[in-house]
Length: 252
Image 1: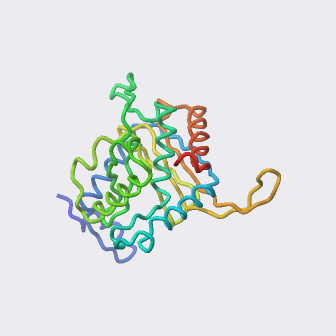
Image 2: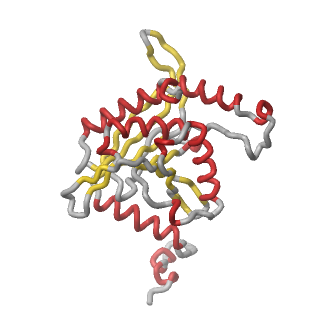
């Protein structure tokens, strides 16, 4: 049997090399993304949206739900990140474009449209990227979404996920958050047919109504299965998602 030392032998010709096995979780992740990339023809649509309206709403809600105002402990305080807004806006777009909330049969001949909205959220952990699922997102308020996503991410990082926490997803959102990047190509979480990637918010100078203004812009990257979704449909989905994210009325 080939040892780790044998596998790294050719690299030792050029200098010192340390060999270490991939963890079990990392091997599972590697196999999953390889299968997805091999079997699904990926296309990625990149765009950006002005999130000034929801940023104002988010800061307002964080003040209203602060510990000082409510008289609760820091642990019980609700903190609104961008994620619950993105999830809620995504749900409203999925309702209008059901092909994005679907799975393709193994033989590629039947599309199974799902009438439930279970959104996976990619969470960065010390063991790699894991995707727990928030069930029935369409039935949750913005406040409930903020709590559910925060608690699920905390359980994921603490290694307390159950199998039930990871099954039944219909669409996935993965966010780089403040780490950086202006765009990327997220790999679809099989057997889903699309995934939304979110990069770091950027303050940009843009033209708006004939004026030059400074606005907070959020880069979005939508990867989709080209067997199910074509470019025109993906563009319409993105236009709807951007509309949802650009107006506070979506979350009222």
